[in-house]
Length: 250
Length: 250
DNA sequence: CAGTGGTCTAGACCACCAG
DNA sequence: TGGTGGTCTAGACCACTGA
Image (tube, rainbow over all chains, first blue to last red; front, side, top):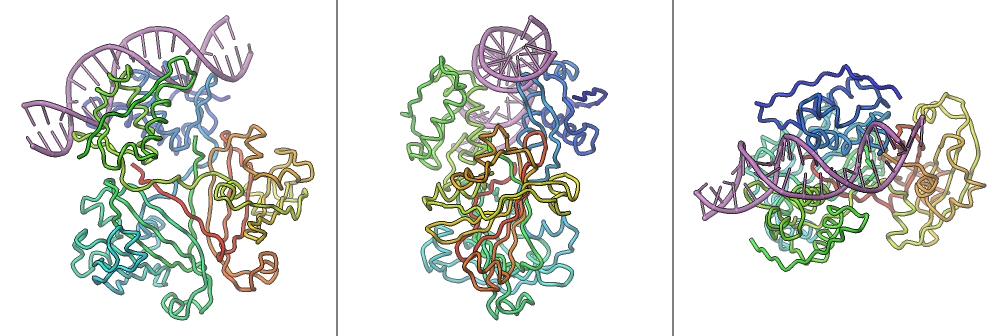
C-alpha cells in the first residue's frame, strides 16, 4: 500500500469556516487533483490530528464527511484510503437549468404559460391542498443550442413566489428562484418513466408522434415538510437521459 | 410548536450495538409509528443526554444520523424537529429482484444466457479490462405475475462469482449473490433513458415494435474501486418506472 | 436576553485486522 | 501483538434564533 505524507494543510483558526470543514475541503481537493492517489493510505487519525494541532474528533469529522461522499473508505485495523473509482456527484436536487448550465449547454427557456388555475386531483394530492383550490401553473419549454429539450409543467402553491410575469424564469431555474426567496429545499419524491409522444407533444418537442419520451414527476418539499412544487416533465429521449451516481447505504 | 416528552428509551450498555445506534433506531421507530408527531420538537440535546445518562456527543451522533436520513431537521436557536413529509428510502443500490420482492410482486427469473464472451469496447471500458478479454455475460428475463417486466444483460469480470450454471440467479438477485460472496458494494454510476423497442426486443418483452422502453445502464464498483458489474437493462415502460427519493445536499 | 444547536478539546477503552 | 478505526465521556465557548 503506497503511503506518502508531504501533503500540506493550512488551517485558519480565525476564519468562521469550521476547522473540520477547512480540512475536508483541502482533502477533497487533494483527492480530486490526484495529489492523494487512489488506494493510498491517509495516515492514522491520531498522527494527523497531532500534526495539524487538532483534536482527533475534529479530524474524524472531516474524514467522515468524505466517507459519506464516497471518496474515502475506512477499514478498521487497516486505515483510511482513497477510493479508486471516480466518484461524481449523486443525483442532486438541482434544476434542469443548472444541470444544463453546468454542462455548458447554454440553456434557454420559453415561458409558455404562467397562470393561476384550479388544482386537479393529482396536483391537489401532491401539494396537499383541496381539489379545485387555486395553484400557480408554470409551463415552460427548455432549449439547448436552440433545440427543444424538455417540456416542463410546474404547479406551485399560490403566494410562494412572486414571479412577476415570469421574466425571472427565463433567466434562471425554478429551484434557484426558490432558494433566493429563502425557501430551504429538503427532499423530493420522483418517478421516472417513459411513454410515446402524442401528436401535440411531438410538435412541441420536434419529435414525431409516437417517439419515446422520458417522463419525470417530482414533488419537492422544504424543510418544514411543506410541498413547494409539483412538476410533471417530458424530455426528448433522443436528446436527454438521467445520469447519476449512487452510494451504497451503509 | 407541540412538544411532548413521555417517550421512553431503553439503552443496553452491555450490548455490542453502539449506544448512538440504539438511540437512533428507537427514535426512528418512534417517528415511523407516529409516536413522535411530524413537526414536534425533540427537546434539547443536553437534557436528552442527561435523562439517558449519555454524553451530548453521543446523543448528537444519534440525531445526526437521522438528520442525514432526512427524518429530522435541526435549526439553530430553535431545536430539532420531526420532518412533516413522509420520507421513504432513497434510490438504493439494490437489485430489481429485491425491489420486486419487497413490493410483493413475486418475481421470477429466466436465465436466457450464461457464458464467457470477449468484451466489447463498451463493456471493456466499463469494467476496466482489455477489449476482447474474457468476461462473463448473464442475460435474464425478469417476470412478475408471469408477465415479462425487464430484460437484463450483465457483464462481470471472470472469476468474480461462481454461478454454477446460473441456478442461483433464478432464486435471487445478482447483488445479493455478490454480497454473499463477500463483495462490498460501494457505488454505482447509472444512466436512465428511453428508446423505442426493436422487433426482437418487443417479442421478448411482449410489447409491439416501437413501444417505448426504459433503458438503464449501470456500472457498479466495490469498496476497493474495482468495477464488479456492468449492466445494460431494458424495462417495459408500460409496466415499470423508477421511483425514488432525493435529499438536498447540505 | 435566554435557549438552542454548532464546534472543539483531551483524554479513554474497545474491536478488529495484519503480520 | 501492535496499530488502526469505533465508540464514548465531560466538559467548553460560540453563533444564531426568537421573545
